[in-house]
Image (tube, rainbow, N blue to C red; front, side, top):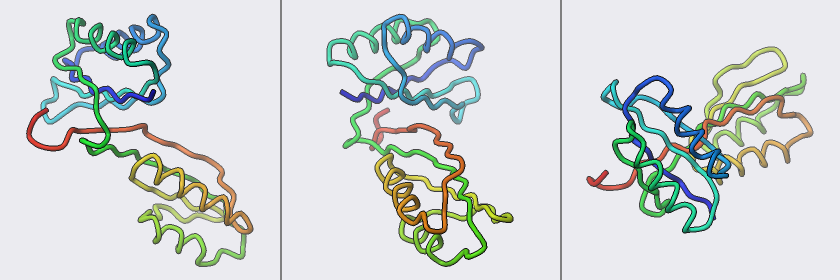
Length: 164
């Protein structure tokens, strides 16, 4: 079962290494990891996506809460939260560049960030499913376009409402 875990920590050196090693020691693979300072530069928010059964996930949350640097640690329920991911993708174009790629971008709300000779860099922010659909749409239009590079940030998530 996929689980998103939000961890609020003191922004100390090696805190990310301690958390990732805790997951590794417990046999959890980190599917995605997003970390950055919050509005307070002394505090960071880490969002981890992993897989496991309910008991194992409950144990990893409990172990994470025990770390000295941890301020808060809780699972994120996608239906009660806003979860987004950022995609940057470089698409190789040929000399017959047409509006197909522009139309795909318009349909998904993607931005064209850079147009260079024979390539375009696109940006899309959305759910993982939306990003997957966008990449599929580009690949289906392969007559003119070939995906050269993909960079995804992993999920960033916040619970809806005032609590946490």
